[in-house]
Length: 153
Image (tube, rainbow, N blue to C red; front, side, top):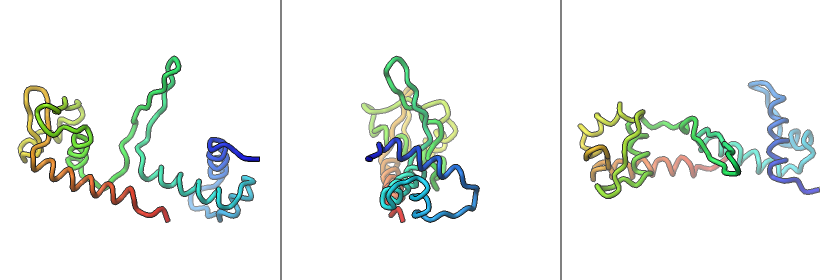
């Protein structure tokens, strides 16, 4: 009988919750415990590990048939706070006056430092990346991509 991906994730989650910190299990043992094929367990565990390392924590909220995703915790990274800030502005596409974005309240601590360093330009109530800010953000984005695309093994 073919299981849905949701059923597989739930079964693996349940099997992993039975263990204590530091316990070791073979994939074969988990496969036997969940009554799944070894390769299925191996593939899904690799996907779960990838998601845990490369996705921020979030909540899915259902409201009248519309699902919304709320990011509750940033993805763990080795980047400094100012690097993460540059990356967020880069990801928003704020590359000039026409694409400038309003800074969020929690971003104000890094903002002044980045303006002083001439990585961010402020106009009225909006901000965008300077040329040097874009260059730095591209480098940070490349580092992020390398980290995300690292082998799962």
